[in-house]
Amino acid sequence: MHSGRRHSSGEVVLETKGLTKIFGGLIAVNDFNLKVYKGEILSLIGPNGAGKTTVFNVVTGIYRPEEGQVLFKGRDITGCKPHRIISYGIARTFQNIRLFPDMTCLENVMAGRHCRSSSGLFSSIFKTRRQRAEERDIRGISERRLEQVSLSRFRDELAKNIAYGSQRMLEIARALASEPDLLVLDEPSSGLNPRETEDLMAFLKNLIREEDVTILLIEHDMNMVMGISDWVVVLDGGRKIAEGTPEAVYADPHVIEAYLGKEDEDTGYGASA
Ligand SMILES: Nc1ncnc2c1ncn2[C@@H]1O[C@H](COP(=O)(O)OP(=O)(O)OP(=O)(O)O)[C@@H](O)[C@H]1O
Ligand SMILES: [Mg+2]
Image (cartoon, rainbow, N blue to C red; front, side):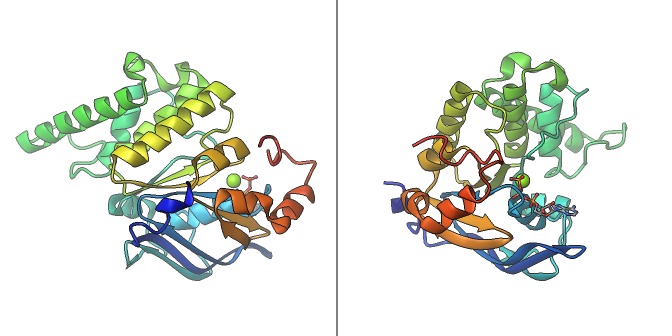
């Protein structure tokens, strides 16, 4: 059921080739190859410290890899600056929520849109007619994104004043405001209660159905991984140790071993299913 869509488009949106990222003496990501197909939900999983977030940070331009390439829609984006990568069509959220706490919810979403506009967020106060029209567009798009995550009622509330689970959804709305081709989510369910996690899963499944978007996510919650992924890639010690359908990966002895070896940590593996 999940795997059916994997190659249906046949189009690779994101590819990493031989990606290696080193911090001091530590090889955080080691010769990592990944293919993300258009229209799928791909989950990157692995124990704490496996290198998952580092992969995201390299893909989104926060770090430059020591070796290897990142190709997005066929274009080599290795080492490009984060704002440039957003403008190419990759938007992300963070493991630790990064919102503008003292801006309203709507302003936070608008900030996600401004990266695609010509005027920029803090443009001059002498606005041209074109800039004012653009501003209205951004507001309209942002209001729709806010509505999509059911947060319209908090439109004028400061981001820091809404519940944690709502902040997670607000960050997703902000990412979506840039109309990305690839949405990259770093542990979107982290800190959510089971009900909120269910809602998030339904939201993402619906998003894939209704919009021309591809989703790459890091996830610890095995219920979510099993329930949402078309394909699962497992990292351990910076290396890919397995990939496949959620069912195949869940039953893979190498994967079980990687997690059980780190039983003390909060990996979430085995918490369900
Ligand atoms: N900026 C950095 N400087 C030095 N070491 C880093 C840096 N970022 C990550 N690391 C190290 O690289 C390794 C991989 O970290 P990373 O954050 O990618 O893991 P992760 O798979 O996302 O883990 P978690 O599930 O805990 O979020 C870890 O050993 C981490 O300490
Ligand atoms: Mg991480």
